Length: 388
Length: 97
Image 1 (tube, one colour):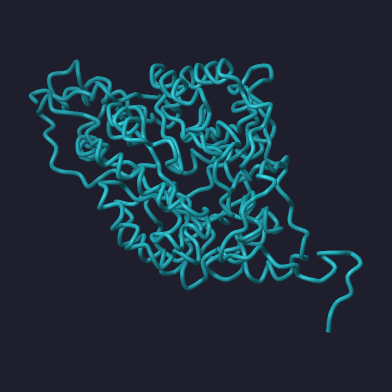
Image 2 (spheres, one colour; image 1 turned 180 degrees about the vertical axis):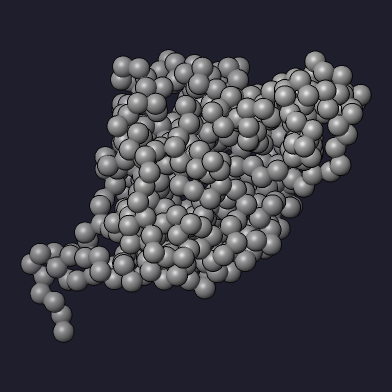
């Protein structure tokens, strides 16, 4: 049995676990996959977080990817990082850089067990700040300068590939080289607020092809979180595991302890349980109905007859779900174009909405990227009369 | 997740050990290895390979560790390649270093 086949059946513990510590964030990125902004009053307490780390240690989860929201704004953030690393649970945390002062950078550089990932969605201030908000480019660059000055080699620069930055891949690599960092490229998902801007932000078919060629040339030194496996349909598989790991080798624990199949699927349909329940996280991972189902043989549905199916395996579950496509059909960004055809049959407004929204109530209006315009006048107001 | 870097020639008759910053998680297909220093993940694709890796520190040579784990001579090239990949990703080290 191949390793991919083994992983499809699931493991006793996740390989890659994302833990979002808080929904609070100082930014309001237009594509935020968790619709973050405001803290949720039910977020796990420090003691509950530590008990969860104890479980991760027992399950031998080697490291957790901590995110948010902006995790560093939690007052107990460093306490939890120290607790995890003291319990053989490594930490890789994603941040917009707001708290990475020279002093924090020096402290981080001293630990083998902590890795840092700075989010940057444009290689230029203009492209980045249009998506992540004014001043966010400068904040990220300052954090990188501080990490580099402290001697933190190989921290990550995490880029969500969009239509606006897809032409900047070499420029991102140059930034990574300048600070001794490693570039990480991931796929834009129509999750959270990402659903509102997906139509304008997701790469074009030509950009996807260029991205694939770029990854084939540079893939060994660039991380992708295995998020572009749908591009394997072009022919050659990209480095990494080419499968959807949701509920099999990957999952998400959200700030209130809910366990979802993957970080891009914050919706009741993908909610497996809560770490506060009997048996904790371990039981959710090993016994929940949803994860058991995800580990059973899946049908390729409409994709089964496609010659690329063995390579792309139908693509990303979350991307299909939040664009209103059936889970056993093509990915919305199917490289053979089947996704576009399928999308044209989805009724406007019929795609499922995320179950949670912690967006700031006064989110700054993005500078250059418009929200998805209403498809028909009546989407905006049931009483509107269509013009023309 | 990790992809192993290209393998260099591996000395089966040398003495080897696991890096002290590597954690092993046994799995039904073999094991997962994680190196806390390089933050890389590797997969051991059989329980026999796991037995070989675990035996490295106690056996005088990698060849002896393979024999002790029941690896047939005809299988040695495959195990040598796997060990070479582990050495080049710094999961295992020569004990002389």
